[in-house]
Length: 314
Image 1 (tube, rainbow, N blue to C red):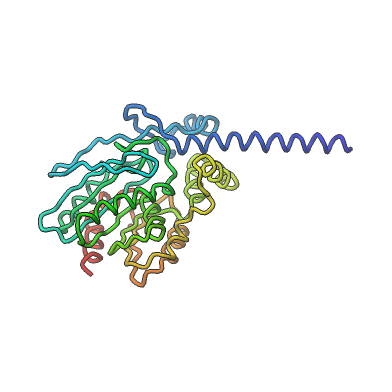
Image 2 (image 1 turned 30 degrees about the horizontal axis):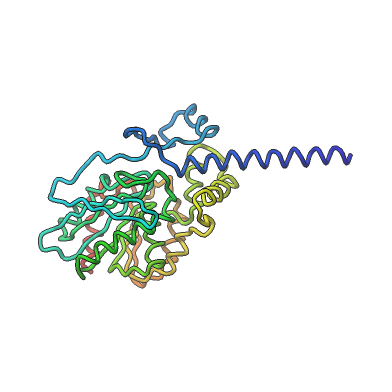
């Protein structure tokens, strides 16, 4: 009997080790992008059963996002440098007689070239815009992504660049990972934007991983916790502490918060967690009934413009 339990223990231990090796590999693939000449990545829900099975066994291979669109109005290309020496690329787009500046931050595996619907509308409202490629995205250097944790430094660099231009009001706008990075950067670096516009940030890094697990029909628990843990180990940060819902407790400026009712990435419960924790005395949650995890300005420009205009003019 002792021999049986000893063998059983070795089997369980071996399976545990193998599982963690596989999970660590998956975490690596999720946070490392590949230079593949602009190949378009498929979303999990766009994949066939065979493609999803391939991801389960071999991880997802993500091509680094490529800039496909450029501004059609006068702009300046700006280079910023991270503490680790990575060059980040941004676009400064001035507006005539501007009343302020909006800095825009894209989501995971996106880039600044996808932000023209929002940037154009902000320009109509009289704001300069500054669009930034996060590290490992678009024309910025690097191939590793921490899903918002280290990207908070990129938010600060953009903030510092704009503040050197003058003392006009600065608004921070971010979607998904970009919104999460803003929530971390504001209290961590003592940023003082006049207002924030946040679109569908995840509540915790583990929640962000859970959405990927659900998309390929894998059990979110405990796999998402393990992927987040190993991703943090590989990237050198405490993944279990990356919780935008907690950073929200230190946000005191006015916030306009957008969410899509059809979102399959971020759950309604996550949205309520982050929104309810915002310490701001002036905050509003607006839900787009027919939108998912996408550009709300692109999906329903009239409703988006109405809410943003009222928020900025209040």
